[in-house]
Image (cartoon, helix red, strand yellow):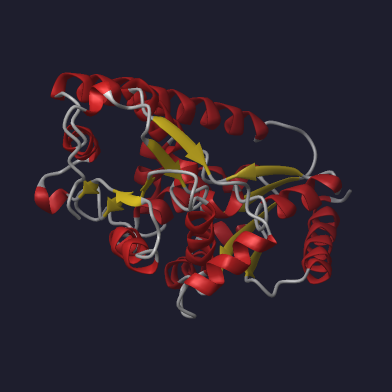
Amino acid sequence: MNMIKMPGRENTTDEMVVGLPRALLYFRYRVLWETFFRELGVKTTVSPETNLEIMRKGAERSASEMCMAMKIYMGHVDALRGKCTHVLVPRILDFGIRRVMCTNFEALPDLVSNIFRDSSFKVLSYDVDSGKRKDEKRAMIEMATGLGFSGKNSAHAYKVASRAQEEANAAAARRTEALYHKDGLKLILAGHSYVLDDEYIGKPVFQKLEKMGVTVIRADQVDRKQALRESEKASPTLKWELSREIVGSLVMHYPQVDGIILLAVYPCALDSMVNDMLIHKNSITKVPVLQMTLDDQTGSAGLDTRLESFVDILEMRKGE
């Protein structure tokens, strides 16, 4: 996607507002993005928490075969209309050999540009692609210089932002690691951050489990480098970066918990394959595993019943 050239932008940032959809990779990179633009003096705005209206608008803007996470994302982009001059939609293909992303993240800028071609905002993107020798640092600096910022200021903004994101990741991993040492019933909730962090689909699962007295531990908040290495024990051929991190986290921690819930959204082809592997091929199934797939028709009563039944089984096995 062509970068938007804005000569002299460093002196005229007041009118520029970058919208950040509160979906998909926002939950992975929010500290990076918000710090980066703040260091450049660019205002940002974030779409509201997911609600029924955002879900409905997203479904209207999406193709029927898109997964629920993509539909939610389109609803968040729609919610930013009229509130910003640009919407950040990065293209992230891969991070190297056997470290690829879902193809949705490769196509996302083109999808948003086409679906929202009638909107006033511009799509702002950066391109992470090892085949083009573009890592995250180079891609984000190029995005900033394309907006008219100097290379020096762009590089400084990325340095500050990447350090802030690394510190946030490390802090989250430490907090999560401490939960494995708590007493009582412990359960790993394994899913992508854009599922677990979403107010409408992931948070209710947390809340229901915590009301039952369960210590809920997120698989995605982990030392990512270590998790990538550990994932080899489950599958030496698994290539999707986010899935490898979750699988590696499970390999690292399953002996410390009483059960695992694999939480996915419909119809995610990647998760369906990876979760099937976890259930049928690996030692992770030494502890009980519940596979749950959410869609926009998932009812609260059905969700409650499945979670309550699973927790009952775990309590009986533990002898509580």
